[in-house]
Image (cartoon, rainbow, N blue to C red; front, top):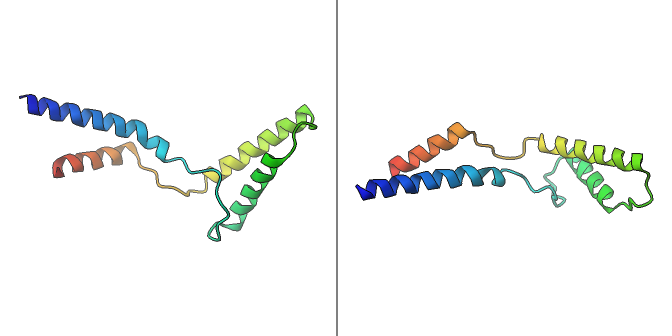
Amino acid sequence: MKTIANKMSFMTLFMILTMSLLPTFSFANETAIANPEVPANVQVMLDRLEEIKEMDKSDLSRAEKKELRKEVRSIKKELRSTGNGVYLSVGAIIIIILLLILLL
């Protein structure tokens, strides 16, 4: 009886850890190195982000800083929506876990 309880507790712990750690792996690295495979429009956005990062913002007015923040947010949003990444739904994760349980 204890082996079944141990297996169930192990599987429950495994599922909880998988569900909590998986979203952290799905985020792409935002500081990408110039790669020849990167499309031209994406490279332009990455260059603009680097330009803004290296800019001296101490002499800018409050409105200009706010405008830069808006621009950075919009560029990052566009870069995230390019679809470069693998995303798994919760249903797919559950099916994978069930298959692992059945096969092991």
